[in-house]
Image (cartoon, rainbow, N blue to C red):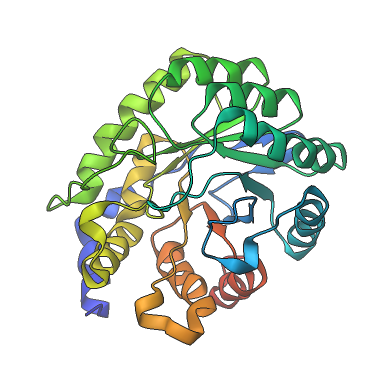
Length: 295
């Protein structure tokens, strides 16, 4: 159970981390400053396997329309993916991903929207950056140096996702250590060094709570882990870069009210000083942040 005493103890134990400031940067004319307020990333799913039906679009025209709506609702970034991270989802090769992604990326970028592409394929990364994508949402570790150089060459940004495996489709059990923030800190310190070595200066770090590890199939275990990471996220700000979280769904708890799950987790993300919230529910999440006084 989460109580005020838990929050007070966390804040007292890590008081210095609460004071940490993170890098701010300009991305295609838009300022991102996590020291001032968080931003929202809206989701566009081009995979029919994605279970969050409200975000699934099956044509380029529908994806472009959804992107325009999300931007009007307050999304600073539009995150587009062509392959679901669900374990049973069909694999989508790089050619098929490009076929789906590129028309959407080109059009939305041409209209001035900041587009993020979720992928772990170098060929998809290159093609989407050339088409105008401003952010690589990197969901893998294999060949990351190559992709970091692509990001730097296009003056783009990268979201460094914590993935225990070569990519998000090849994960097993997640290390559920006693202190998740400590292991995440070490992982991201190495990733940041690699990104900077390859010329990347604009980045977010993402603990990867939206990924599907085998030992998080039990809902109670998964939700407890997610809550702990959300509330400890401010400790990662000592690395000097802003944080990103994909807000989870907790269908087992919310059932018919599942669309309320992400706004609920947005409260925990806000308490943990998350800088960028990836959500399928932009207007609901924006209303929560406004109510908390952080928007």
